[in-house]
Amino acid sequence: MNTRPISESQDADLRGSMAALERAAQRAREIATQTGTAIVVSHHGVIEYLYPPFASAAAPATAPAGNAHAGQEP
Image 1: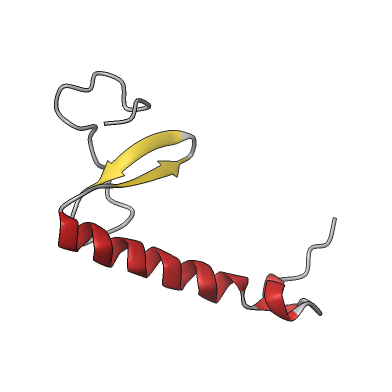
Image 2: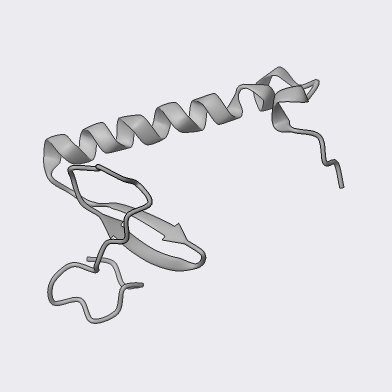
């Protein structure tokens, strides 16, 4: 397995992939804030729903009301 950081890849697309993912995450937070919807993430295999405002992306969130199982779609 290659243990070199992605930033050192010879493939330009791979080198730029982290920046692209960060831009996409930021845009998803912006859209969720505008529409008042949750962003669904998985932390250590646990599905979490993050609602705006996104003060901390690492802050735990609860499943939507009426949803007994956090793994179900709202």
